[in-house]
Image 1 (tube, rainbow, N blue to C red):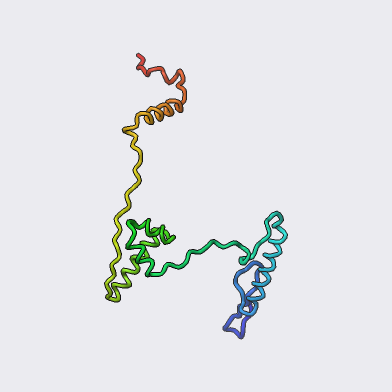
Image 2: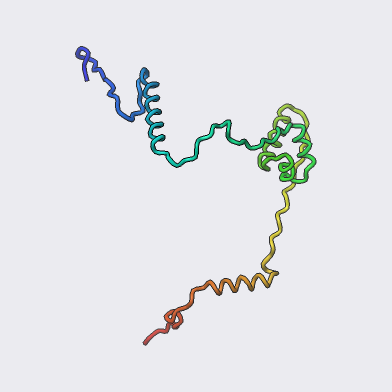
Length: 163
């Protein structure tokens, strides 16, 4: 540390290796050097990896055509449940529900009446009840019995109080 006159010390930055604080003049050069070092390490370390394909060469998922508001409203009002409408449009049910709520809010804010159907909850799939299925109950009881560890002789002895 040097001093200018007797009042103000002058602080100099000492460059550190692998430091992420840069001076403005050397920031770009330091970043370029760091990237080159990283690339050299990656080139030497990676041997048994499939070749990298550019983004243009990678196969794309087929994208669904954009669903216009007109199509959305028609399909939404014609379907019985949210899941039916979403499936018909190729959407996630939560996304379809959110879009309907957004349309309702936009129309309400503009003061325009919009009649979008309020879908009832879809019925849950009926699970087979165990109470009325005696064959299944017996099968599960046999599995439970067979999966129990064998009792040892010490476990069978009743605990009696000795005098």
